[in-house]
Image (cartoon, rainbow, N blue to C red; front, side):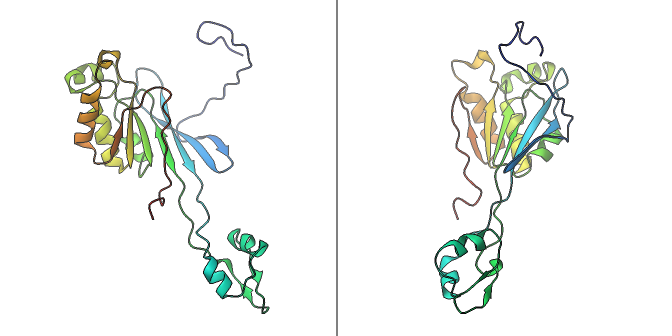
Length: 210
């Protein structure tokens, strides 16, 4: 255990160091890996990558090939060949489409804009990026190793991300952070969010609109 935030936690804390490029968590259906960011101390961001999902199951085609409705549909979808009613063997690729990509979420934490973020966020469904200041405080952003909304937008645009969430907004913009969002949108063609703490953001699957 370690002393955190100036007090002893009421639960055990296990700390495992993860270097940039390493997998921080390999879970069922997704993995989280670290990448290097730039702040006034050692810092890194994280990429959550979901595994590919099975392709779409073509039920009409399966029935046409003589597969009886029932458990054999599931076996085909799971990649197993099955026997049709006439004794012929039906292979999964005859009735299941190609794998469909999972979602990718990238979180930078506090950082200056970096090329490694562009690489980590390539094609991301959602990039959550530091946007502490607006253009009016660009010098302050550089001095404190943070990013402006426009810089976050430029990173998202170069990464070809689908959506951008601007976070770590300075309290000086508490009354109106819309200029930061506007400046990000001037640099990024995708959807730009300015979420509040506790907001729930739905990230659709890449093929949701197909």
